[in-house]
Image (cartoon, rainbow, N blue to C red; front, side, top):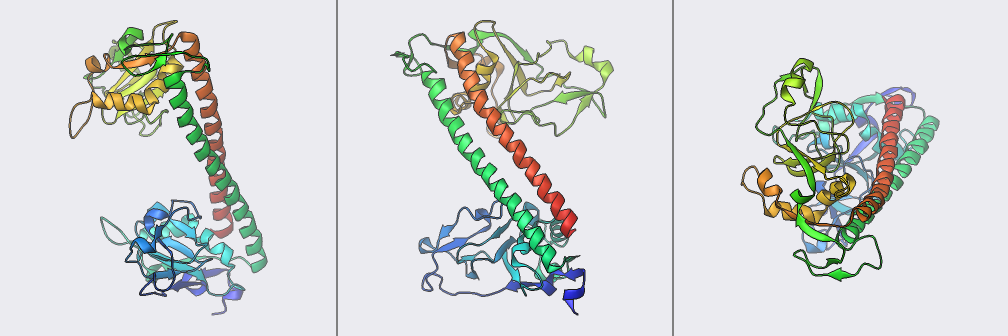
Length: 396
């Protein structure tokens, strides 16, 4: 058929599956190999690879400009454009445009990123534990192919969005590195440059800090463990350990208790906005701030509230997130299949505590970094939404 004058085309009519092999990559002068683990989901750029000299069984050849597509577990959305020559896993297809004057090579990776292509690849995958799609099915995928001049416009726009996404992704990674380094400094040595140090059970600490069990600085611990909530299809949100992630609350999965059972259930105390959630098991050690809206806490979490003028809630949030604190808590945990910590044991875990004024300052510094990361992540999310909308509109 004359695909130049057709709007709807089959993938195999415009895209070539490269099946070139090289029996001895090292002898052929190839330095790098790529496995599925080296391709990041929804990232068109290869950021890591293995070295052929260190050993590999891969023989599938790819060259700069060709597009790598993970055919195993296609739902992971692994697509990348090669910018170097190498060999790759047999679980990766190597694609390229059959004719640049029909399908712009720069547009191929975005076709692979479209919801229609992903959905088709997943639907045509076979296997239970490790489903794979195949070329026979992919070649029959149909999509709209715009005229070449429109393809240029679409590719330029999508690559501009991709460039912005990479910038925000790099910014977030650098900010995360800064955050962890700043946590290490502030939570061990404090925010004041002239802090003098003294010996303690936890090593050197500023002279005006103290080391004590966390319970000495807590006003209350609200614990609904052992009190199974009766769930309903709607009503007041139930926040469980499954909702608490590393520093934030994930609304999924959404669970509820009925309005009429709220008062009956909430007899052990009402968490306040600004209190701190801490998961005691499944998983152990997740931390988040208590939200302002009305909710009911589930099992496997405790709510912590510091003593006024003794323990700042913001400082407690960062202290419990800190890797050194997490390690100390893990050391006090019990269980093999499900690792957890008893409230009675958690109360006795010792931590470093500055004066309240320095706690607040430390919290404010770390909050500032976190707010920057959150802002960048929102921009990145918006860019991904924009890219997906453009893909659907232009290639759907």
